[in-house]
Every structure is written in C-alpha cells, then in structure tokens.
Picture 1: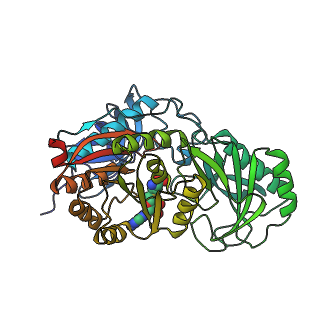
Picture 2: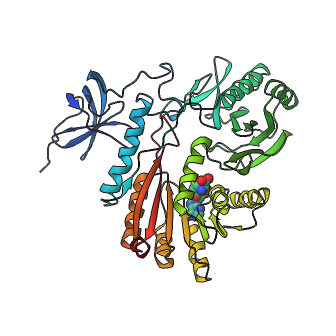
Picture 3: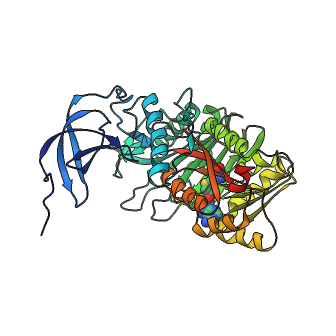
Length: 461
Ligand code: SAH
C-alpha cells in the first residue's frame, strides 16, 4: 500500500523551523516529515510552498516570514545574493558561530556516539570580513563588455562584481585592475559553450604577512594577446605585485587551472608566513585561504600534540607541509605524507627554506605509506591527520589502532566524517578528550574542528 505523505507538491503550509542542514537550509517538520527550505532559520515561523516531495523528505520555498529569528540580518549586498558561496550571509556572525558549534556537538553525539567529549566554544574571527587570500574569478562577456565575478548559485551565468566582502581588498583590487586592462585591450573572454575565446579566469593570491601579490592569468590559448602591455600596466597599477604568471588551460573542463604555467614577470612564487614559518606559494600550490584562522587552527593542533622535543611525529595528508613544519619546530622528527607529488616537492622546499633538517616527506596515499612505515619500524609518538572532506581511509585508522601512537590530533574540515572516524578510534582503544571548532570560513557553511585523542592507557595514567 502506498503511504500518503503529510504534504503534496504545491501545498502552502505554515511551519516553524527547527534546525539548519549542513548546507544552511532551514528544516521544518510536518508530522515528522522533514522539509528543507533555503533561507529559513531555526525558531522562525513562515509560510512555505512545497516544491518537491521525495519519500523521506521534501523541499520548499520560503514565501512569507511571520516571525523572524534574532539572528537574521539584512544581507550585505542585496544585488549579489549568496555570492561567492556565502550561504550564511543572512545570519549574524554570532548566529553563524552558534550554528557551527552546535553542528559539531550534534554530529559527535549522533554519528560518533560520543557523549562525554568536551566541545569548546568555537574560535571565530574578530573581523570576519575580507579574510580570503586567494580569488579565482571566472571571466565572461556581456553586451560586448568583459565581466568577471562569480557564478550564480547552481548556474554557469557569471555575475559581474566589483568586490567580494570575504576577499582581502588587495585581491579584489587586483581582479578589477586585470579585468579593466584586458577589457581595454579587447582581449576576448572564453566562452564555455563554444570553447572559443581567450581569457578564462583571473586569479590572485596575496601573502598577508609579506604584502606580496601574485596575479595569474588563465587562458585557453597558448599566447595572450598584448601580453607585454598587460604586464606593464599591471606592474604600474598594482605596486604590491611580485609575480605575474600565465596559466594555459586548453581543455573543456570546469577545472580552473591547466598544467602549464609560465612566469610573465617577476618571481615564480610569492612568500607568506604562518607564525614564524615561511612558505613559498606558486600558482598551482595548495595553501590555506584564511591565514589568520590557519594560525589559530595550527596553534591548537600544536597545543594538542603537546610536544616536548623528543617525539617522532607523523603528519598525514600534509599538503605542502604547513602543519608538518609547524610541528617540526617542537618535535625531534616529523614525517609527512601526501598524495600530490608536487605538494611534496613544495613541502621539501619549504623545509629547506626554513632550515628544518628534521622533516622528511613522501608522496603517496596515507593509507598505503603509513602501514609501510610501520612495517619498516617507523612508529610515531604522535600522529596528526588533516584529511579532505571524506575523512580518513579506514585502512589508515586500522594502522593507527595497531601502531598505538600515544596521541592523535585530528584536524577536520567535515564534522560528520570526523565523528565517524572518532567512533572507529574509540572502539580501537582511544579516547577523544576534547574538540575545538575553529571558524576558518565565515559566512559559508564550512566548519573546521581539531580533536585531541589519547590512547586509553595514557588517559588513565
Ligand atoms: N595539512 C595541509 C593540507 C590539508 S588538505 C594543510 O593544512 O595545508 C588535505 C590534503 O590531503 C590535500 O593536500 C590532498 O591532496 C591530500 N590527500 C587526499 N587524499 C589523500 C590520501 N589518500 N593520502 C594522502 N593525502 C591525501
């Protein structure tokens, strides 16, 4: 027998939102049946139009707000709704922090079944604006004019914009200047549909501690028309520029950067510092986008590692060695592993740049390299993991359980997979002592957290 759902498509219903989903939509329930409504906030009473019904849940559109949440604010740019992935821009920063902290608490209980873990109040930013040190802005044409901005949510239509409130002003300025120069010289924008045209993306990176700016011009074509003129004007108008790079991406793809880069002017890299550690950043390198909060996050990871100088540490998913080198300041030896070989080359260069001789790096899958190290007798006292959103591979967690490092520090960009992995470690003889959420990406739904995990026998000591 077909069960009837409590609502039908196109119904208008009055609801009170109870919760937010991990992507920031309001959740209302009708006889237990959840309906997800973008823009709804917990506690708000509203009229909703049901637009889609599935077996277990439905979707709705907010039609009218009867009662507003105290956390609801006017969005900063009415003309640019949810631009640049700011899904939480209708929530005050205080409300956003509360939402992210709750999310961490909820998943640790619901998915991790961890009842007695201490979750600290989230560490937010004093000034949660203009924090991003990198922009990758798609370029298009409208009415014969070059435009650059961001894609409308769920579409490939580019909205021209003069600024982003979450990017560092130097980055915004660089994008505008390059757009103007290329527009003036008549450089045609790339067209996704026809796969013709030249200019695909304007990218800018900025070392917040050093004031060094990099501009990357991404084109479909191997050459940029008027390249010399473009360079000359950029150098004149952007005095902080240290590096101008041309990246060629001739493929039909959503991936922004191609493999080929050529320095047009200046240096191949710019530098930045996190704490006292100096990093070289090239056009293609991965580098954390919120330098202020990266320091907060790494300091917490270092505190949880509680190094005395005698430890051997493994840093899994090490990227360009940022956490590894932070740890190398306090450890006897650090071993970093990362799947992208170019990142490992950067990690080695960064170790050299800072004069660290106690850090070694190997390219490969963490779940393959660490078991191999373990077999070879390389055991760690402390293991740090910082996996991508899907969390740690189970084979890696099994190796940790066998290897029994005294401490594990888990840096996570996805609370749900963190909770899942913590449960596996708990069942394997570890205890999660405390978790510190850190807001790395204000106004977006992304939530970062660091967990301190200790071998049970060590807890009891
Ligand atoms: N710790 C670094 C990078 C974290 S991002 C920092 O703070 O900057 C996660 C990293 O894991 C990425 O660099 C990604 O390339 C890498 N990665 C993804 N899957 C992996 C795997 N199976 N083994 C090792 N590294 C992996």
